[in-house]
Length: 120
Image (tube, rainbow, N blue to C red):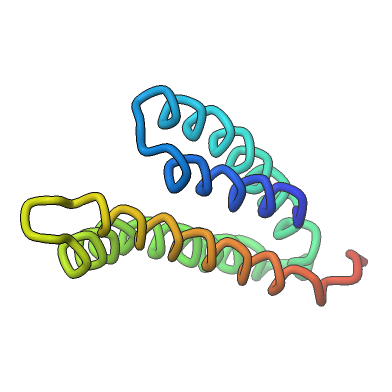
């Protein structure tokens, strides 16, 4: 999972280095691989560390909310960052801050995974 997080963070450097249409295609390809790998491994890990029994369904529901709420808040945070750091009508500085912020968040999430030693 840490490798998938690092791949996702590295993908966000692509638009920072080259804010062009071909670079965005490359970003979409690399970030798709990183995000897809991360989410599949994350779901597998979550189902393994949950306690067995009657509360498993409730726990999976809570994990679903914990996964989807940040995805719902993402566009709001992105719009605030882009507009706050835009230089007038030039939105490029805002997008650069957005991708740098996203890289930082992904790397922090990779650090949050490290304490998990294994599953039962």
